[in-house]
Length: 158
Image (cartoon, rainbow, N blue to C red):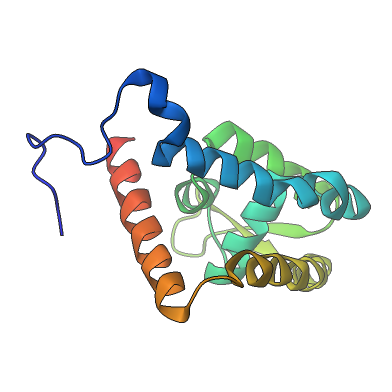
């Protein structure tokens, strides 16, 4: 269900209540979800969070340009460029020219990148299972739909 833009927000509250707002809660949840990656998972594998996000996109969609990785991950173009450059230096990503458009560069996971992905995704799935353990399947599906709606809306603002 879509809300008319002229209607007041159902979450509108005085500025002092921003702490309890959905956007602040999403920021806190994002930080808490990333903490184990930043503290141990990434450093143990010489992998940054932007690199991991790029790897997830490349695994899901196959060969992608830098711009496509940026669009899929929500990361800015410079962050994606640095992440993919570092992944290439570490032999986790290869780059080739697009056969249809010779100007376009395509990034793909290498065998080493796929191995790293498989190792890290196991830990990510464990984290996801722990995060959703108190939710019903219906709640998880509702959360996925809500997040998809929020992401689509935010992409429209970019």
